Image 1 (cartoon, rainbow, N blue to C red):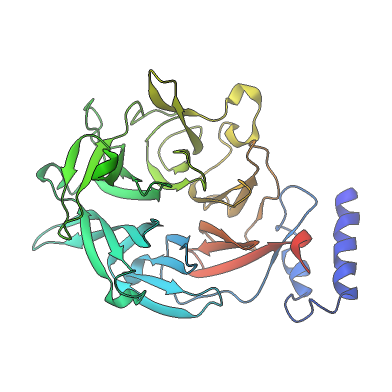
Image 2 (image 1 turned 90 degrees about the horizontal axis):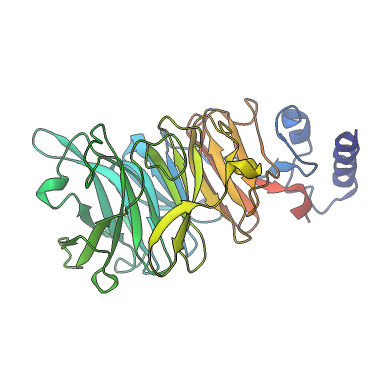
Length: 364
């Protein structure tokens, strides 16, 4: 009953307020009222028209500039868009599926490349700064595969995220996971040489020497917490730490996880931020069905796009569920999310669109 009262009060406030009439269409409440709010009294409201023109897009990033970058997967390109929704340019690259940005304004992208007879998964660095942010003219450097051991058609690079020190993690998946030292399902740390990620040295064609090392103590096939079993997205926090959120497509009871970096001075490893025995909503077993993307806002709230549930879930930094929303009348296949200036951007790969949402409490 309280939710109904609050809902009616919000509608009434929109009717009275003329200042928002040119931005928000009151008919959206009728269109989405059955599905838009899964939990909580505060509503997420769609704002503006969807942005389209994509073909099975699978990742979205709001960069430091800020520009919006979309992995337009089946159109084989990265699209750069300004905050007004205007396309600024695009870069041809085969089947991009994941994207992040370092603090030198390089884009790090998981995609593919062809040889004369086979196709390999790859990780690229795209140098926007040197090209004056003319993305179509940017230098593209392949980071992986370079070493002979990395050329394997069954291995796929599926996720990437950058940390505060310009090191970045890349997730890899594949069918062969019996090796103790190098299973297909792994996370790799790649860093400037001075940070010494451990392991081997990478020297891409641009001469920017990097180091690469496998992140230890992460099980490749575990169905529990701290697993690399089918990682399909990663998102670092906006802090000076090495924590990140991952979503997983492999068999698991916990398909969205908070990897917390623990250091005792004696050992360093990742542990789960939350314990399911504490009843934290973020780690309720089987809470998610097919999550494919996540993002974190400046307040530390976590957003998870669950393509299998046609929904976006929001949690605070304590793991409590907040204003989750969705349903078939809102989304077809919400695949990835990004956040900027109170606006939540949802990339719907079923509709081939970007949809934007704002909390009702943030309306002015």
